[in-house]
Image 1 (cartoon, rainbow, N blue to C red):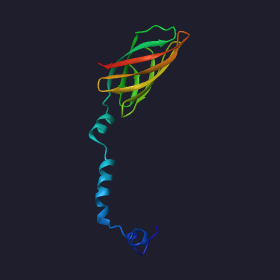
Image 2 (tube, rainbow, N blue to C red; image 1 turned 180 degrees about the vertical axis):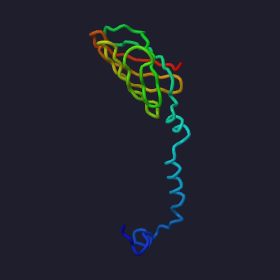
Image 3 (cartoon, rainbow, N blue to C red; image 1 turned 90 degrees about the vertical axis):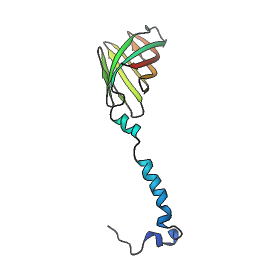
Image 4 (tube, one colour; image 1 turned 120 degrees about the vertical axis):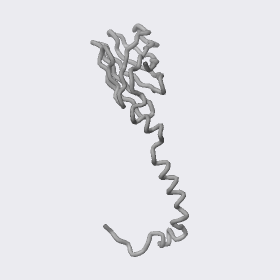
Length: 139
């Protein structure tokens, strides 16, 4: 460890700054570095539960209006029945999911907030390339 014989505040470049003058700035930085209670709630699983996701096809020749239940635990998204589901949810609610049922595969993204969510998806469903939107509600 390097030791300096004089304080950095006494160097010419810092001579006009007083340690006490910077105390409010350091306090403000410390407050912004501490996570808010909302961030803490999200980190502890604010999106946990079963989500019913309804898919609407906007492009392609795929059926529309089908629904799939997803399970959210912490930051992980998984299947709550039928098909293979994998994905994640960020602290801010951004969600990314991959779904496969037999030869059909799709991926999607969007956002969860409170007890609802929405986003878009695309994939190959029973051989047809399709895309659309999704809406989710937490049970």
